[in-house]
Amino acid sequence: MLESLITSKTRIKILFRLFLNNQSSGHLRELAKEFNESSNSIRLELNRLIAAGLLTSQPDKNKIKYKANTGHPLYESINNMLRKTVGIDQLVDRITSRIGNLESAYLTGQFAAGHNSDTIELALVGNDLDQKFIDNLVEKAEKMMERKIVYMIFTPEQLAYFLKDHDKLLIWKNEEKSRKPGTKDKTYFKIQ
Image 1: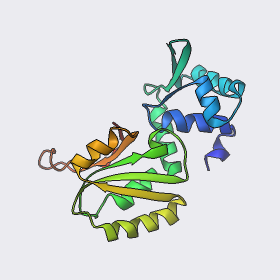
Image 2: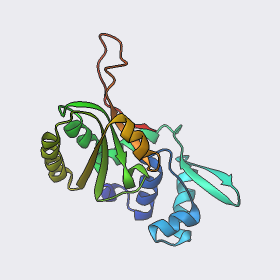
Image 3: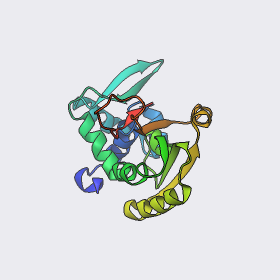
Image 4: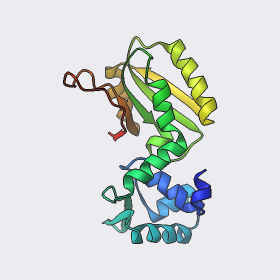
């Protein structure tokens, strides 16, 4: 779908890598190696994105580090478009509601690191979660999104241990415990 809007596959790879998770950054040679593309084609796309103000660059030892410009007016729109392309918004709606005492949900693995992937990895945090119901929802979401979904269930204590060595992207949190009376829970995406 995104390929019909953006014809450069290299640009799409860079957008996924740097915009899906705003904590992601990369150097020219690192991105070239990761995407298995020439450094020249990566350099051209990085320069175009910098000229448009969508990326920032800063010296990092003898290299230049590139990151998404989160202050750009189009940052949120691009981030949302990428999430919709991946299907994260649909996944949140399907899986994070009605599954028990869910406290939070994290994206881990390739997507949390800013890479596109055929597999979505989730870390679900809570107690007494209905695993059969989750399996049913995951199966439906996989068909709808045409991606494999792998999930793990953690208590908050287990999650802290698991996430210390993994990239993570908070995609949902139950705000009920900390919200004021009369306000609603909300689903949101936040980098951790």
